[in-house]
Length: 221
Image (tube, rainbow, N blue to C red; front, side, top):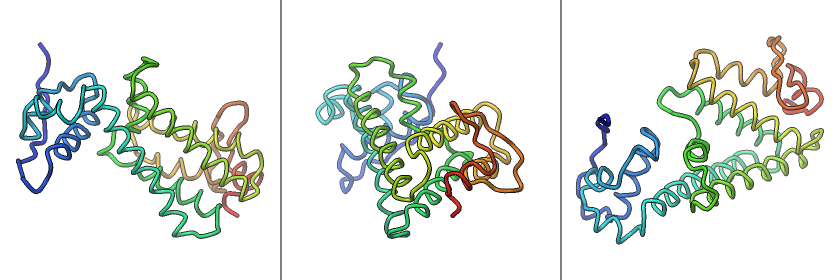
């Protein structure tokens, strides 16, 4: 017997188009319960509509999943524009701001990790339409970080970008499996090179030490 899925109910409001209601509800349910666990019946009911209307706007559940992830990717991508506006012509400050934003997400008890990463685990099929959305976003984000590292004249920008990604992904797993207490502070210390931190984090072929991102890469510079 499958457990009941708790839903948020979006009251039918003519000012909010059905497509937007469906997408908002799907985003909440997919993120909180997992993509595979949520059916179109639950989404339609919570959105105050029916399956016929849902399929009129989204040809299939797979298309709805892809659109949900596309909206997540667009929101995440827009954060880079905000950082650029806050720190014009200062790539190091933009990188620090991005890391601090990510730490905020990791330390937030209401969050269940990165929606795109979660979806990638749930959707292993290479031909799933959502996979293209996930891969395009991750590739673009990595490229953005590499470009900022290069603009800041940091050492080995490609490897640094990969290390930061791995550090954050590891933190997300830790938050879900062990707990978040103190995790944000540790992540900031390891990522930015706080002298008070004596930990060494094994990431890929190198060690991220308290000094590795400050001295050799210069994120605190």
